[in-house]
Amino acid sequence: MDLLQSVAAVLSTVVGPWVLGGDWNCTPEELAATGWLEKVGGVVHAPGTPTCNGSVYDFLVVANSISDQVQSTHLIGDAGLFPHSPARLIFRGLPRKTMVRHLKAPTPIPAVLPHGPMRED
Image 1 (cartoon, helix red, strand yellow):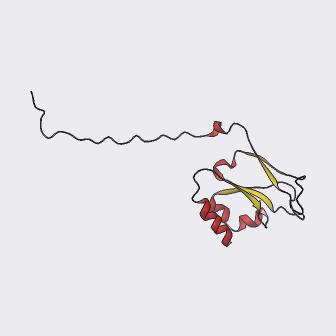
Image 2 (cartoon, rainbow, N blue to C red; image 1 turned 135 degrees about the vertical axis):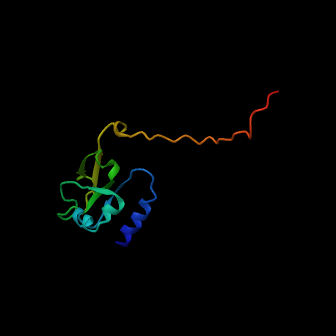
Image 3 (cartoon, rainbow, N blue to C red; image 1 turned 120 degrees about the vertical axis):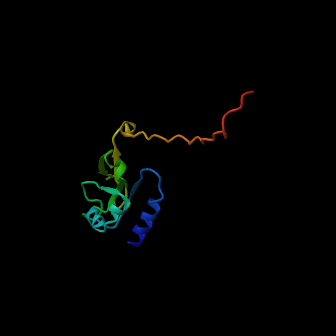
């Protein structure tokens, strides 16, 4: 849990979406039971097949803001790693279609008015 709290602290400084993958040494269900996913605002994307010794330990956590763009997650069986097999995340194409424009507020113009009426010259 100490490591997860440290990762949560780093993710809180990230501006924009993020993807975090690795050997979590636990199943996606066990990670979700800790409440860490809610803390960081993430969603687990795991392959449908076991990645190590009959369990899914290798998976990815994706920021909520881009989780809907994930098309699928697959096991890479021919990576040459034993006993773990890595996972691959595939995003949908054309991510700019789902981007949202944000309006930037204009810089304020100070209102400096003259004191009294204007002079006639």
